[in-house]
Length: 439
Image (cartoon, rainbow, N blue to C red; front, top):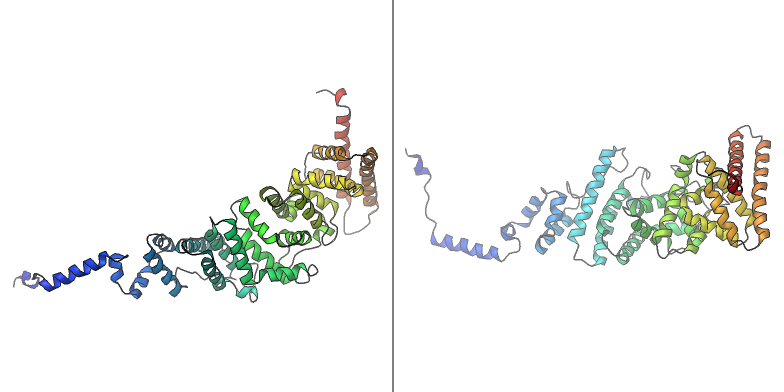
């Protein structure tokens, strides 16, 4: 038997040819071409095989494709690849965490591209809906907030979505998210209560603002903007408390509000760990936020270093050194102009001690002292400042010598105090007899 008899190719009937021609003419006028012929469920099924990157690229090909993918996201919000549900409270390796962060960043890119023609109000609805789907019920039932990665994932998503938005739109995004989560209401409760009274709420607020708005900033100007959004609706005294809430020393379960009032740092690494983030935030606002004036910087640092009680002068000196010469000089000159001589002399003595502890050049203290003396109009004030500085060291060394707490060894403190006054004296003597010394 001839095998070709089973493969007979009949010429299509005329009616079938007309039908195919009609379909082709119809397809030409459809936005998605032949893909539009498929049933909607089949289209959605095919989209499940695409990566998030592919979907985000498809959204910018045409309005019809964007609408199709919008419908797919709405009806399949928790698909295999569209919205990964992180194991919030499991201990993940760094590579697993990085994978989650990358996927949520790509989801942000998908959201950004698919809603690029929407009004800001409508786009923020999608953002808030996304937040509510991954957050642990506004942290009320979160088992382990410190290790929960839900807010970090949302922060990656948010920063990708708002990249390129102008400041007014970003401000609306901040207000909308804070209103939706009740974050500002919690902050108001914290600021109007005694430090440590709402320890869990304090830690939750710290994690929320840092993980959603601050920790993912790639540029200093971006970080300055989000900090100003957090601070601008509060008076200076509350801004200082907020700054400590966000970046002050903390344990796993509470903010260490009195750490700077009771203890000093043993070395440079510890001082950077305790004060580095606060100093960076102040430096960021001072240099990159036009609305933050010199008076704002001085006022916030002044309020910060007296909250919840007066900081130890060595900690104040450490903070000012980390903030940079511009802020430190303005703080010292402000105290000199306002006649706060005893406070200024104690602070300058602490500057010497900090420079010795951290192996900084003592010339910085001398140059700062020179600038302070120049702004003092009365000679008696200049003499009083110099005499009080030396008296301060005398009292410090005598107090340490008589210190008899068996749990604390004062020998290191005595060594640093004696070394500080020695180095300062050497530098001053060198300047005084410069003409008689060899080049």
